[in-house]
Length: 208
Image 1 (cartoon, rainbow, N blue to C red):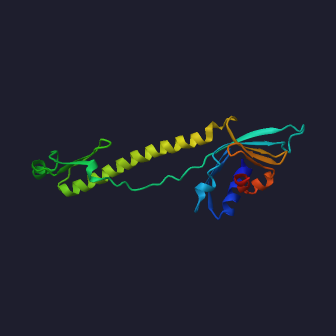
Image 2 (image 1 turned 60 degrees about the horizontal axis):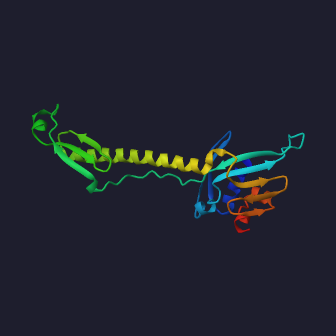
C-alpha cells in the first residue's frame, strides 16, 4: 500500500498537482490532491488493486498476494444555504409568555416553516422583524445540517461502492513484481514497467 500511495503522490507531482497528506495510519492513507484536471487524472484508479510479490523475508520463495482498495472522491464543500422565498411559510403569531402585555396582545412572534422539509422555527421576541430574521437564520442552519447529513451519507456510500469491501474479486489492476508487469483489467492494457508505475508513470497504462 505504501508503494502505491507513494506512486500516486509522484504521479501528482508529475502533473503539477498539489497533494496534501490528510491521514496515515496502519492500513489506511488519505491525501487531498487538487489542481486543474485532478479528477480526470485519477479517474481510472478507484477499485481493488492486487499486488503480487515475493517478500524479502520469504525464505521459501513463495508468492504473496495483497489487496489495496482505492477510492477517489470529490471533496465535500461547506456552503451557505440559500432558501428561496417560495419554500418558506412565514406567520406572525401571538404566542404569549413572559413578554409583558405588549408582546401578549400583538402578533410580534414569528413562526417559519420550510415547506420542502417541514422544518420549523418559532421566535417570540418583542420585535417582529428581529424575530423573522432570527427565524430565517435558524431555518437556514437546520436545512444546512440536514443537507450536510444527507451529503455525508451519499459520500460514504460512494466511497464504499468504489472500494468494494476490499475483497479479491473484481480486481481493477494487478501489479506483478516478480515478472515486472502491470495489467489493468478494466482498460484491457498492460505494461512491463512496474518500476516505472511505482515512480508515478501511470499514463503508460492509459495509452498502451
